[in-house]
Image 1: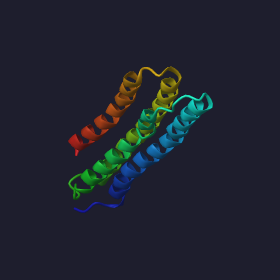
Image 2: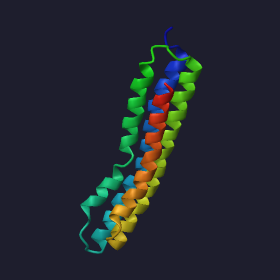
Image 3: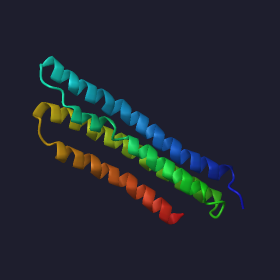
Length: 145
């Protein structure tokens, strides 16, 4: 049994939705980091390079989408196309939504860190909690496959 059209839509959708979420997320956290640096420059304060980490938090979600793309592609038709479709789209939507959520948290974290100069580890933990949801989506989807 080969993978049919619905299966390929699920496989591609998983990766595509992950990437779309990461791109939308970058539209939120990238400008926030740039704006935070701008605040520093306007106030003649040193701009903390470390907040660049907040700009890249959504990138891991692309990797998760790619991992699932390869796992789902390797099913060789062992699971039905409707199941492959639902697993792929469900996981892709979850990972994409997490990327957007992570970006919103990262944007707030960059602003907060520049204003206070404190709490970097705490802010990073909140972003990490959002990351955990993506990891759960990957692991649970792989378990179902």
